[in-house]
Amino acid sequence: MELEFFQSFTYEELLLFELPIGPLEDPTWTVMIPGVTQLTEKDLKYRLQASRAKSIITSDSLAPRVDAISAECPSLQTKLLVSDSMPPSVFTFYREASTEHNCVRTKSRDPLAIYFTSGTTGDPEMVEHSQSSYGLGFVASRRWWLALTKSDVFWNTTDTGWVKAAWTLFSAWPNGSCIFVHELSRVDAKVILNTLSTFPITTLCCVLTIFRLLVQEDLTRYQFQSLRHCLTGGEALNPDVREKWKHQTGVELYEGYGQSETVVICANPKGMKIKSGSMGKASPPYDVQIVDDEGNVLPPGEEGNVAIRIRPTRPFCFFNCYLNNPEKTAASEQGGFYITGERARMEKDGYFWFMGRNDDVINSSSYQIGPVEVESALAEHPAVLESAVVSSPDPIRGEVVKAFIVLTPAYSSHDPEALTRELQEHVKRVTAPYKYPRKVAFVSELPKMVSGKIQRSKLRSQEWGK
Image (tube, rainbow, N blue to C red; front, side):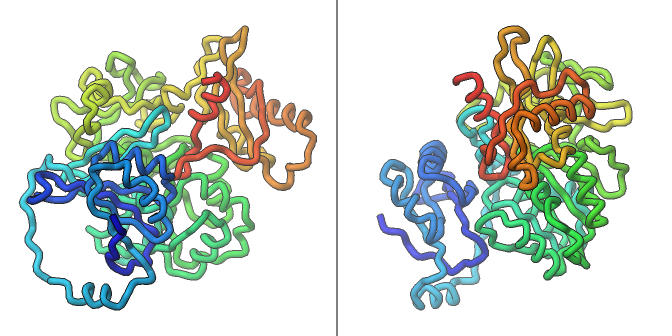
């Protein structure tokens, strides 16, 4: 099957699966399954086979990957190419396309989109969102966390195939905000900073990894005349990064926390007091609690599972299910709550403090250690560009903290043993002494997902020989 030309679209390399619902000869509507641009052939084949998608839209650079695996995807019937170099006949077709459009009447729980989860602990799962509720949930977050107005120009650097990019489309457009798009073939701090200096961007949203890179630059060389609101999500915000960004730009950095299954769960909205290191308060319309493994609500200050109340009333902006996996859907619910798989504590004032994923928590000599706490402490040392903390086997303590560290250029030639001792002592001073990394490895880079999140699971599997 040849790739068919579709239309010219230079906006960004787009990868989008389409899954027609109903018989092929009479499809009722189309469910979109966005895919990020860095998917490998293995990734593509898994997603196409799992979703049984009937059509795919891809770009010039990604087309060879699609061709390489399409024969192994029997459901795939149509391939559409978004190209910068198309014959004139295609442009004619595009100009003369019919303006008539018949809207399909759908029910509120009918599927709208399917997102594949991050896959931090295994194969990605398909998260199904409904026609009416998904977009409405972002309307709430737009008012509460993004604080967008009709005069704002909003730039979200996230790949359009990632769920965080939906926060741009569904949050900005209902309010008439302008969406700024820049095709970034790779993350380049100087390109991002020059873009912010050149264009009237008022609101910026990046994953924390990008802000870590930005604060390594001399930000005093840039003038951000329009920038007034900055947001981050996808990883826990290190206080050190927030403080450096605010000190050098004068703009606060507001954290938001959510999942592929939800919209924003917790956030620091504009105007609310920020407690450095906290991921803020519960975001409407969710009732967020900290619960034990049986679904019982824990008192303030105790660490437990981050959970969203789904009974007796299921939140309207909440995923339908894990598609084709009723067992996982059922396992995610406990005692009237949806269990996010992440751990935190909530203080009396309603602020949540992230500790890590359930499978990331390190149990060393009966001490429960959240990797984010150690990573935040390491981030305050000038030698550390970024780090990932995981458990490592130990014959006496069961497991200990191990830190994989990417050094800043200024410290790349330092003596490793002396620097290890210095960093260990630094962590002991910044946080509880028992949390310091007893093992340290200096690496050139950390394994990351296409969204930019660090894959602790790969490092943990490496340590435990799995």
